[in-house]
Image (cartoon, rainbow, N blue to C red; front, side, top):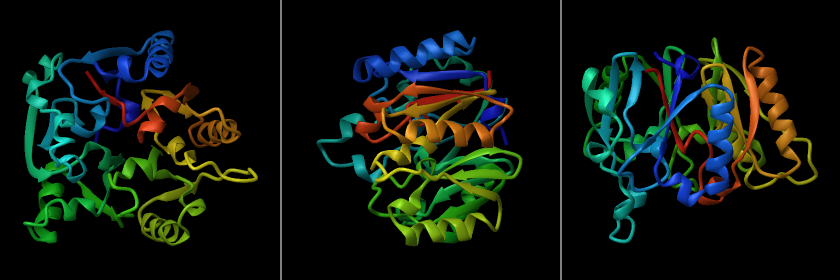
Length: 276
């Protein structure tokens, strides 16, 4: 499985500079300063390119899927659904194998963790015309690995696993501070993940945990560069320190991400990092 530390190129939606101008300028400057290639995806309909772009499993293989999430299906929201066939600046996909997965899926609900993929069970809800066993089989065939399923907290409408965990190398994952928001779900996540991974939970020593502190887990890693959302709150420095300790082989840098977080996502959500 091609995980983040093997990637070398970052793609961003052409909407990002318009919708999150401060984030765009800071992010692209940081990528440029660290000699990381970044490119712009044309003809997108929102900034969340992680959700609709194909998922790379190895250098010459991508998995595409049906991007039609239930939170965008009403007549007022459908305009934000990007048709990947219309996206510009992805000519290189014609030189690769693009495997079609006949399931409704969001890329934000696919976290590649070594030889496994972690998803929430929302994937079963959005494909309820098929049995759970069939959905699981199709996923395993497409990604060529075992899938670890986490329960879906329906208070989080998107149901994305990239707001819960992040892979940090070896057999290790970081778990967000879900315990500050829902102890029951946090315990369920830990119980399931510890069967497969060495899990470290992010924690913040503050008087009152900020409601947006979940966003730190949604960092972007490209190669050995790790870009961590910064929100202008006391948790910023603690998040940077904990992620740096978990990834000592990486350069960990903060990027102001409040514009995206206020819209419901962070740095992993607004990027598509692959190996070219």
